[in-house]
Image 1 (cartoon, rainbow, N blue to C red):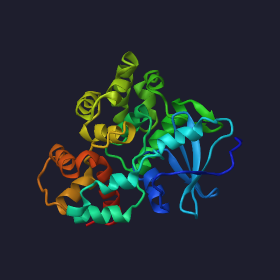
Image 2 (image 1 turned 60 degrees about the vertical axis):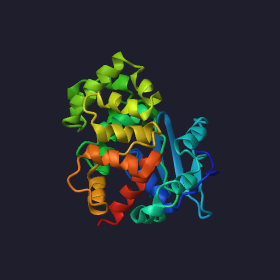
Image 3 (image 1 turned 90 degrees about the vertical axis):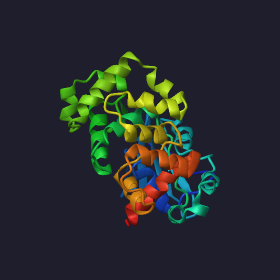
Image 4 (image 1 turned 120 degrees about the vertical axis):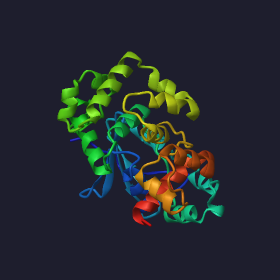
Length: 290
């Protein structure tokens, strides 16, 4: 069994609440966080890292990492974007003229956007087509267990795109990926022959990165915007899924608009942090449906 470091407070420029910690880790941004009832904490995996997080009664969070992986603590701070002033960013959103956005912001103080490894974000959201969060988590776990590198005993990283390229489509289908296996295999083969492509996409401005990512097999506008928002820190990306369509129809009367039109509306209406606003209205709608 691994040895875990003593719990230590992680300073945050903008504190979580217990609710927004859970929503950030388990609300559809990332798919490898689980709550451990016996330990009363969240355990998550990203890259080659594993960490545990718990909410502190003092209003902050405490973290514990494997003693054998000292590099995990600074990586976690980066993953959570601990130094970013999310409260100041929230205040720049157009809540003064948008009463629904104002309600969503007030309901989730401390909510933030994670900075996940971009290649992992692309993979996870390729699994998201027609699936809900619990089902995506199962697919990611099966891929990790069967194709990923073991980080700690019984805990595996998601497979790299090179590891996925070495697998057959039949192997991927056997892990419960269904029709997604074909596109994941095609994308893996493409990225294996162009290993610099995802780095180029991540480094590009949003207006260039989105069409580059959509050119990959199986990547549509929503998958691309999710990967760019949660994995490449492009906060202007505005993913449009069924929840967001409902919000924009019912709260903003945008009936009959296509997803691409709604995405453009989001970027114009909410501004350069449209994806940050999206996360608030997405979270609010799931808990307070119209």
